[in-house]
Image (cartoon, rainbow, N blue to C red; front, side, top):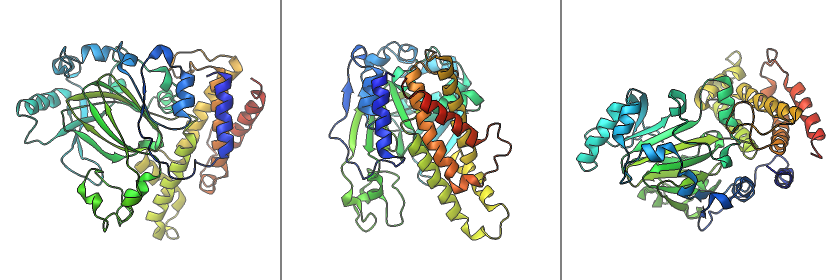
Length: 424
């Protein structure tokens, strides 16, 4: 990040003063297509797409050197199932049944990859049908299960990735996934976890994306307040079931070809269909640009938990603590872990600034290759959100006595760093 980009970004967020962008946005008429890697910089992406939170598609030229595009794909562009079987066959993977609705998702089972590949081959031979249903390998943590160095490399545009930086630092999990499945597999309507950004590359195959900007999803709720499972269902045309449907603007539809990379902005609800046999690589990621939406989402999640068990508020000892426990179970994170998430990233950025560094390897747990200006921007964003967290009444009920660094002390360090880097 250069100084000009940092100044632009900080002015953008100062104008919001801690609020999320207001109003319901309409989808653009089309998505921008980025053709040449040598003519598109990180600053171009940051200012044109990350900061305004709009999608774009990168051409296959951005991924042509990836090992997965060479080894995972046959000469005719199909998934190389035999290669995958030989190299990863014993790994147990999660598989969803696209033909079964369980709430607004699909039930999953786990099986060795070799069993899924056997199913897939039989599915193709039977003209895209199987008595087992339409099965989709989703959310396979390949990086967690084995080395992915020869599979793909992290594009610089997505290298400010606090979510995976944090999980790598505590060595617990990650948000890097492989998806693969035959034509007809799909993902129901949803927004990404924690209101994260995501990026998705088709190693082979084609996808159809249906995307709605933040706020448009509210018009798709049914008369009970629930979001749809399938936005292509004729049931959405029934005004008795979906009384606000007419107020929803048309979505943005994108056909993603083999090798292409799609940036999915924060809070954009979407539905995805595989038009051919497809393999894709996906990351969910958070950084300073969508930290406030993440914090807003977590507050919504806690309020939802509190509403669900409100009748036990007076009778249950430590009711507020139980709400946090339930939130962690349902959402994957609660206020205590959110603080630790902020703390881990903050301490790394403060160290970067103290050492005058910022030229490390992208995606490493120790640094970011985006430089000191990026570190200063990150510190400014964490400072604002941490101050809001500390002032939150529900966080004030969290027992912080065992924290290695008290939130107020961390905030003071960050505020001092913001002042010190103002002229950087």
